[in-house]
Amino acid sequence: MCGIAGTYHWPDGGPLTDRLTKRLAHRGPDGSGRYTGAAGDGEVQLGHRRLSIVDLSETGAQPMVLDGLALTYNGELYNAPELRAELRRAGVGFRGTSDTEVVLQAWRRWGVDCLPRLRGMFAFGVFDERTGELVLVRDQLGIKPLFLVRRGGGVVFSSELKALATELGGSLEVDETSLVASLLYYWVPDGRCAYREAEKLPPGTWLRCGPDGSVARGRYYSIREVAERAQHAPEPDLADVVADSTRKHLLSDVPVATFLSGGLDSSYLTALAARQRPGISAYTIGFRAEDAKFEAMPDDLRYARQVARRFGVDLHEIEIAPRVLELLPRMTYHLDEPIGDPAAINTYLICTAARDAGVKVLLSGMGADELFAGYRKHLANLLALRYQRVPGAVRAPIRSVVDRLPVATAKRGLRSVRFAKRFLSFAELDEETAFRRSYTMYDRAELLDLVNPDLAPAVDEVLTEHADTYRDNALGDFVNRMCLADARLFLPGLNLTYTDRSSMAASTEVRTPFVDVEVVEAAFAVAGRDKIRGRQGKVALKEAAESILPPEIVYRPKGLFSAPLRAWMSRDLAPLVREVVNDGVLVRSGLLNRDALRRLVAEDAAGAQDRAKHLWHILTLEYWYRGATEGASS
Image (spheres, rainbow, N blue to C red):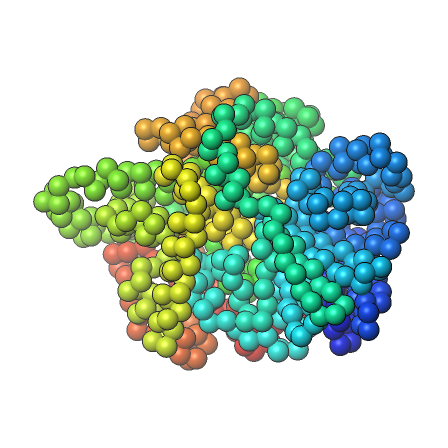
């Protein structure tokens, strides 16, 4: 895994590429390089920072140049051995064993037609010296990032947005509609970017720049089309598909470890990995006892220990008692855009501990919940359909009682009340609106109350985008419609984003065997009734895992890869919340309404509503906006 950057027909492209590459040093501390080539009457510059995982020798160094092609590549290609063998049968010779060389030779032989053949996570730029064209590519599912800015016929690109925002000299302006989107979701959707001129190359697409200033785009993969085709396919042997993906994701010339929370997804992958690599290391987290009690968090550690003992895993336990006031601005900087999920801190601390122990690669269970309907929101939206059949005369007193219940006492949070309030906030809405409200932060009226009145059109634009994305499919299955929306919005916009930035900030690579093209196809071939059965979610995956995991792990209550937010808010962060709400940059600039923020604080303090996540995101947005408007951190 690496960091890539470059310019095409850009003034002072060489020095700019060097500065961008230096900004990405944390993504690749093992080496760096730059390529310069002629592109018509301009130049192309390709920069690279290397994190050596496969082929540690100089034959894997980048940018890689071969027979008129130059490549800067960030990724891992899990079917590289098979593609290398196919290319060798066609007479292609190889200098080394890196997957970078496989990508370059595949491009040389098939051009863009090679892209559907690639199974992995990647973003790259490839330059053809003969035509003077630069092509930028992003993987099918949006695992790896690629940001770019186009001006005239020129392009500048980078693995991280912060590099572009900093090195373009402050010429990028904040996109306020994207900030509205981040308030709604607590992250910026993959189809938007926090700066107006910048964009994210969409998953499964390529962009070609010509020396005459022309720009062409193409799509080589559509998860919507995959899901629609898969609904008519026979249900696969899911255990075989997941085992194959896990085995391929272990491809490495350096040690590989796993995240192990003790939940189904990480336990399943860890057990499969331990079969292939006996004695594999795993990393898990715990929390201060007082924080875990206040948050009413399950005891995940005992489950992780049980899995480790059963499969001979070398388990490393990390207690999360971070200096939150120090970590908050640091994580906000590394995350590129305002992201209000504290799980990013967990990922960063785990990866830092692993890297200190000499581990560069970890496997994560990310993606299983989105693809196999494992979140509470999936079950809750199904239950909402039944709730709507309850007579209104019965529903009204239920709502009245739940509205009056507190979500916390002075000593602990009341999780069941939090869930009940959340459920009733969307249970009577239409399908798309209910699904949106089941995982986003505000309804339309709350969002309009929170932001500057001039941003009202932006609020409606963001809500319309969600509706359009959710409805853009021909799936007849409600559960799979929710899974597809998650795979297009929640997974690339939040979970894959924070996983990439948090892990790369610690100079480690996190691999996600469930976020794999073969697993995705298998997941959408599973009917919704086999994903949620009764009150049990992720049923198909649980049945597949039964072949290797004990029932007490497979069917344990679902935990959360999160942090004790409510404890942090009531203790560590309370003074900062008061400062930001009363005199923060967002309030002083007029973007956010001070009175609305004060109501959030009051509701949370009184225990009337659970606003901890809302306030955490306000803090992340405040720190991000400070950096964007006052100069980014170095």
